[in-house]
Image 1 (cartoon, helix red, strand yellow):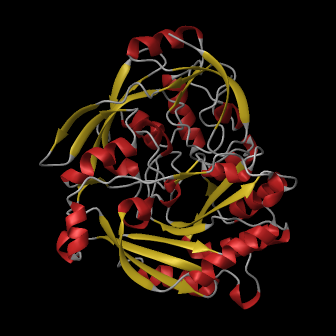
Image 2: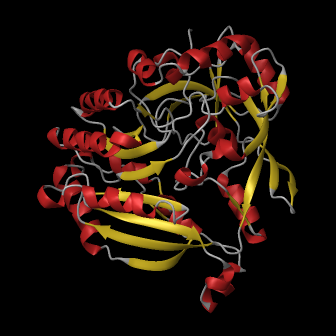
Length: 449
């Protein structure tokens, strides 16, 4: 097995760590790794922080374990290895009339990584996260045993692994339920809203009628425009609803077009002025519209720009995503936004979504509102995020481990109180020597070594 010593990071490029990296082709090789190393699985590295970094052991990439195993054309049940990506799935099955029931905002995520993060999408308020559609998976544990997990069998390990950030074992393969579609298009409704109150009112008004819902918000607008944004609603379009031109395109395999950010943008181009201008430009050019959008444009707009994280310079970015309970969600998010502005901060990409109920021990979602923001790493950013953490805790919320790069152990355990203790019981049962370990796990106290 080959090893490389390379500097790794998550997609946020912060923090970075020098890691020993390998790509095992199969189960035997992973077992060999576990004999003398701590290991963390890694897919495409799209978690933002240090969840797939391990500078005290080995990073084991799953990209060679990327085969489809079986597919039932009648039921839409797919069995595949953990290294299969959303892109692989979309390229293969959309043309055959099937789509992932839940998708994150990028298709460059492996199935193993999606399960470990319990990813959610624009339809969480309706159907939950990916774990709602994972029928089973096989996981290689620290002892070398391969265990099949589902809601019925070994369900403790199932729920600890879903959202468990790769710390319970190496997911080998999984069986997931796909969704039947008749076209690759989404009926999209965009509503331009002038302030925060109007934004929340419309999210609630339309949440029952649309399968997909997400709102872009201008973080830096002030006065009567404070909290202005654009609510984007969607439903899967039936083939008979489409104009003739799109009906014909629905029968063709989709070919992506891409641009790239070929180098890291100088740090001083990201400032309050440029963020304000960018946000104002989006809002002022937006219109109330109804149209049909291809799934690629609707779900993965940033995938169109290769290496878009380069705009945050070498210092990288922190993607801060919080979830707070419904009853005081607007109040909490209002406080968070005002705190960001008080620090002179802003975000190019800030979105609000309504979340539904969710199972899972360390899974991020619960019934409430989630706000996600991108901040360039510079003086004051981490201090600001620590202040945001206090507001989130005050309102009984938590932040998303897949996006996190700064939580300390005390804050994490406050946010996930009553959950991390239950998770640790299962971790100790299946991995008492912390063979599966990461920089994130050690930082927040989920790994003891």
